[in-house]
Image 1 (tube, one colour):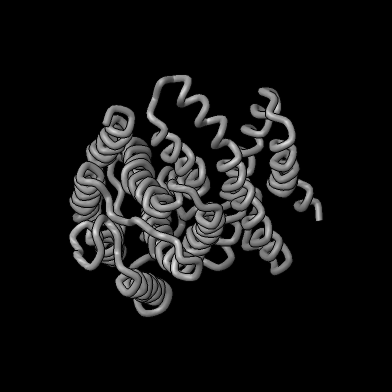
Image 2 (cartoon, one colour):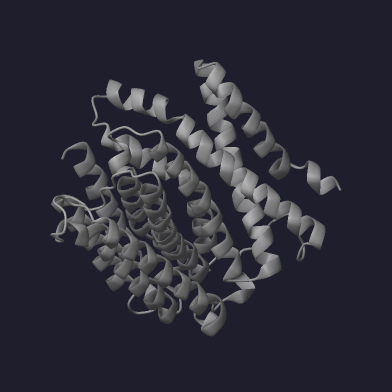
Length: 359
């Protein structure tokens, strides 16, 4: 029972308390303490995801982390959409686009850079990457690009019938990807270096059923408070961005980065331990879950509440998205990586953020 009183169980609970106090008092000291607790909740989420991964094995551990945080994020997006306002029209599109750009360029780029810096060259299974990318590209084009070129309604949006079709298509592609990843071709997603797979530092072996369930519970608790604190920080982040004379669109990118912290840290830790396969499973699986679950959910809510929904990206964003996908495809086409691929992806990330600040 002593394990239940360590930092990974205590910090998320304290973070939840801080979240509720955060709304009552906006003092600088409390903001700083809440920020530290946010980092603690991220570390706790990563730890519990590792514990679960040891017990259930891959790729189920990475799927659980990706889907859990995506479901929580979807719930928050839907809540904000229901509050109305002009920003609600673009909320799902902007959130998904920011998340995908950060995953493809930041998370994968840092993983390749960190792994290559320590291990020079890392290998992974090409079949897993091809399976994930073909699914991701299809969903991205159908949801973020095609709306700009349909003619049933004016503007970068779908008609009601088209939205329903796209929602079903996203679920179909993502559901089939999960079937391939977990049943039919599970071997595609297994690490070639199982002995070096991510292991939680505080567990000598797989956890028993009780500690497995506790880790599952506290994974959800940790991820929930991470997302909520990231959203709670939004006004402070927005105020800081405005004071710095930067465009308001940068706020969404910063919040998306905070929300993706647990997945990003777990992926980077795996890459440093020479388990790039787990890193890619996390990154590409997160991108697929983010868009494959978010779009159907917001389509359902938008039709239920008769809300308008704009999905099509502008030309600049489409070019940056295309560049990111093309670079990732080339970087992962050989089944091996080196430090150059990581640097190029991070340059793409820099270009994305730079054009947000200086459009």
